[in-house]
Length: 149
Image 1 (cartoon, rainbow, N blue to C red):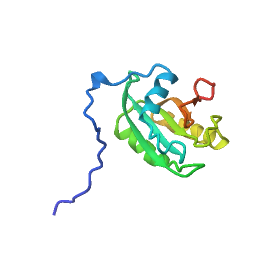
Image 2 (cartoon, rainbow, N blue to C red):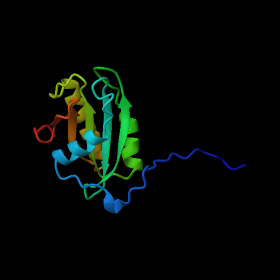
Image 3 (tube, rainbow, N blue to C red):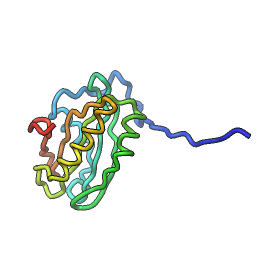
Image 4 (cartoon, rainbow, N blue to C red):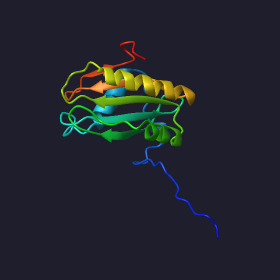
């Protein structure tokens, strides 16, 4: 009897050809892309954490919503985050989440999480280009622009 196992699959929706993938050159580029994609009905209600998956030319392969939580936080499971990054063969990422309160300054928990992800990413030669925090009105805070990466 032959052993059978389930296959894990990462898929792309939309069928956008790789020649049309948007190149990220700055925090502004990433912020425009992400805010356009964000659900405006929930951005001021509950915190959501997403990761932008990039190829070696900093072109966006896709955006993955890792979690959606409550008013003041959301749970991030690093094992799931890295499973998605590795399965998609991404070489760089941009982390992002929103603050429904509109406060753009990163909390100590935001800083610790970013540091933890950065440390783990070094093991896999994955570059963290930025971590963006969004307010419901589209304003954003960039860890990279503010020297926190």
